Image 1 (cartoon, rainbow, N blue to C red):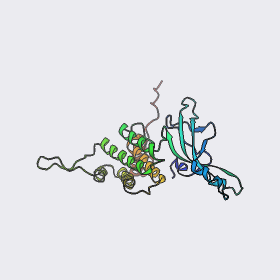
Image 2: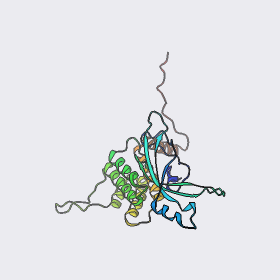
Image 3: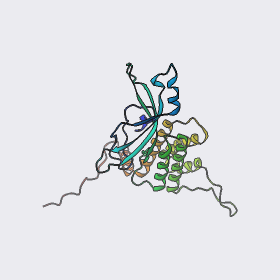
Image 4: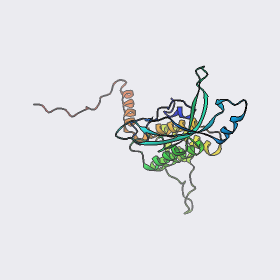
Length: 258
């Protein structure tokens, strides 16, 4: 399943659907058309006898507004601009846009209410830079994994020797320790860690790769901090043990007899 912001990883004509990062309820809308500015380099080639409108390049910016009136948040967006065919087979040339900046940053990880602030902060840091620096964002997702391990009290150091503190454990080793009690979550965290590692060592990491890692981290956080997930897992276990429907808690207290 694609990340909700996946459309923003490519050039777009119509504004993709974006959830407000402040209220998480409304969606951002464009009140006015994007403001565009053609670059100096693009303007200089207008004198070329072969010049074509599709050579136009530049930047765009605009303030988007949350459609949920109690919120009414403003989000500044900016990025690259170009003119290109409208992809319908006509001769029309229209504006295409590529996002490189948004502030407040668009949420790439959905954190349950119980998520510790240190984890939330790391995901916000990733969201700040993902559109301009995917590799940097991947590294910040790895930091979020480490903060999750800290929050779950997974030890950072190996056994002490001769009165000396033990060797600092790698993230990989800490995830393996965490797997003893949470194997399903540990598998997800390991995948996010690998994407984070790629951000540190590879220049070709794409925004799509990072958004996939963000989706995985969202899944891990919900497994740990969303009680409905634990309740569902408990229900699954009960049904399997009974080989049939399991009793449910009453939705409300029983009415007293008259």
